[in-house]
Length: 183
Image 1: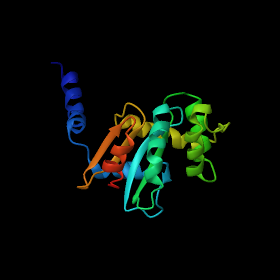
Image 2: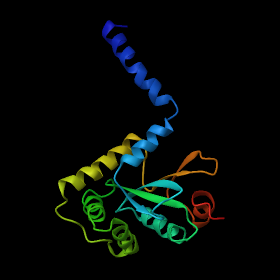
Image 3: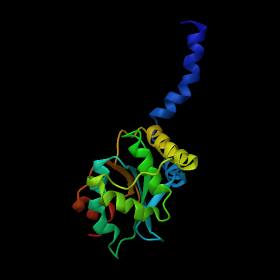
């Protein structure tokens, strides 16, 4: 082995060790909290869940629909924070995501988009303001850095306080029992 190759291996060793270790949940939660998100649910929640959402994702729209009975339930103690990303469609993901993030009431804009998804969703915001574009790029970068492969991906606290993740559409029953814990 050449000295240069040995040096490269020694430099990469800490990175490989870090990549194979358990993720630091506190650090992950800090990163999720610091991302740009749109909140649904109680203003002062007892618990918080994070959901990576793309405006061009039909599965995100389906999951959003499944969540609405629980989000609007008066006994709900969970706030869902939608982290808007731009992965699926280069233009639509960004322009409609920007329309949601830049709206006067982002939660209402998200609801309009998801409700009208089959008809094309919310009217795109063009041009996308640089600050909003940066927010979507940062959220997308976070998703990629976490190794997530698609939307929707949900991070939520379980009954024991341990955090879980779930990708794809989650049934209303599983949402009610496991995520929102209304049963």
